[in-house]
Image 1 (cartoon, one colour):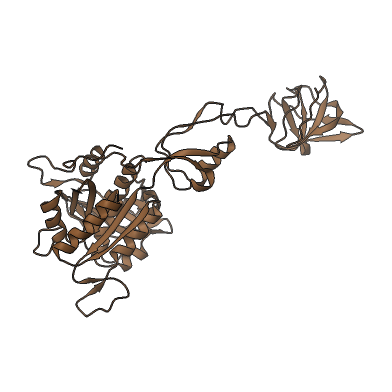
Image 2 (tube, rainbow, N blue to C red; image 1 turned 180 degrees about the horizontal axis):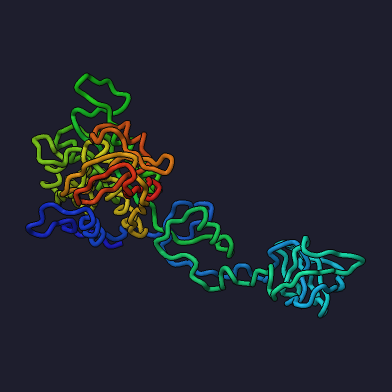
Length: 415
């Protein structure tokens, strides 16, 4: 795959605050797949993988016309009732077709999924008829083709059934299996490195003092990466030392297709992620009009893209979902996606100021959306409490109970 340009994240001169939609479109336009192709991966290993090429059906589905119900097959339509038809000996069952021609004016016993015998095209449900002394008695009219599935009505041979960039789920895998496809070409899994930084941050299990905190971001972002179907590369935790940060980024550049960092991307004395990226790579700090979040560092380090997320867990989570998830999808060979939101009546009040988009931790109960009681970016309990985000655009808004607001469930981000 063609590598990304070193200056792909550079902002045009004079750009200051960037609205969310504009930032997303700018990011989308500068990315492309960076992973190679894995050939002929079997069905059993396809869940969560991304198709590398279009797939065409080698046969039709269903391959033959068959019955949708248990009943009796004959040549339709049936317009004159009541009527009787003699039954031929035998039956057509799924996997055991009747191989002879059904004479005109005759009927045959048929079961669900069985191939329609020659000379038949219509099926009457067994509860809508009666068999007496080898004669089928019918009292209701039927259109020709009733209760019959046509050959190829779902898939025709050579139809394009799945397109390149599709992320394969159990339902897509069932489509492949239905036409006998044993293996397909998929993109290699995107390798995503996760690095956290900060002297005040300690890995879980380490001794801590009152002025230190446990690292919540790295486990959270690592779980996000794996749940999205990518290969996790744990780059660990780096202290606020230029040499440690540089060494971690170098490991990431060697092992990863993308690096996610949290913390150290502002312009402070100890923000060594941004300093290292400036000294040894290409970095652009995108000031995005979003709350929580705002600064998002996008960089290239030795040919590997780096997404520098804020250090506060809530801001890191929101930016990872809103910007990181679609970017990772595109780099991995999938389609860029916009999460689908739904208008839901609010069960809260808020006086929103103009200027920035806001994404509030939220969940739906009894048909209404409620938001977490605090908007603080360090309140990790709100992340566990929430089931999605309320997305408020840049405009000033006065929200009262009953006001329709946009709710985006986490499932819309691929979780």
